[in-house]
Length: 429
Image: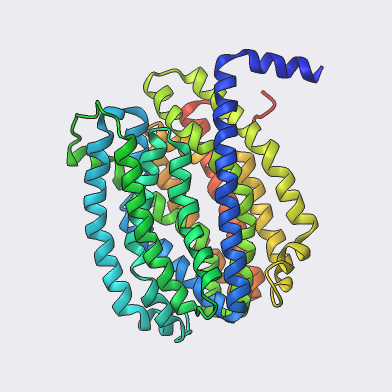
């Protein structure tokens, strides 16, 4: 019975194309996930719980500041390069020009205000030099993200994942392997320089793979009309992801913060399935919606959910059953974070089961709906994680993060149903 169903699936050309493309993206994404996991492993083992807590907190700050500095243009670049390759070059170059200006200003401000943030927001004065050394990473992370999104829109999956997820992690691992006395401060500087180098690599890939027929210009007005709502989406999505660490940074010790950071990065291993599928389907969502082929759009969305669930659920199950073993891999002082891993894995379970709902809304021109979703979930995340962290410490921070992730995805499911007419949770169809 099962083989005949498989044959029926493979008999469809669209199904074969999706499976082959997703399998390739999956294989490349595995390398990205492994590199991220190994980088976290080496940082935690090398620096220890206290020092790595400062490094991970500084990185979360840089990630949020970078999201602000990209002014929503990462998803705008993905949308226009995916649906209209003839606009790829002009859209990408204008976006990079704007982002260089904004991210440079943000990096300068982060550098000079690092002592204030460290002492007043996080009550950790020793965080200040780590923040300063990593501040230049705002520019590198912003630029490499834009080129990775452009490559994804052009369906250059392997190049996109290498730029976004692999290259900087490889440089971090190499530096930790070659230099034995790296502190959190020095490693922050290594990340900043690595991100700038990866940004240059991203530009090289984009120049190599750019569409030769990409001669049309996009107006600044059209660019801002798309990126405005998406700016809020990206910032508030970062709040959902990193609010737990922000609040924990103000209420708990550096050691407990390191446990949360490592648990969150381990839980995110399950999301590499979702990201791999998104790399394939996001440009197709934009094309199918532009062609008004709603039936094919629904079929592609449901198939992607089934594919994500099939591969992600066993990984999440392993985190729920063997959390202590997984956390012990990072060294002494991390095993106590086993319950944090279990809590965060539940949030990733909801993330996997809902599928690519965020990209469905953004690639179909419903950026404002996704903006509203992230405004609600991001604000909810900040309030909830603050309250739960103040009441329950590090466990509350993990619970608030997991609930916020689930809330964002379930709200997006509602708007997909409202705007596009189908429910991505209906995987039995």
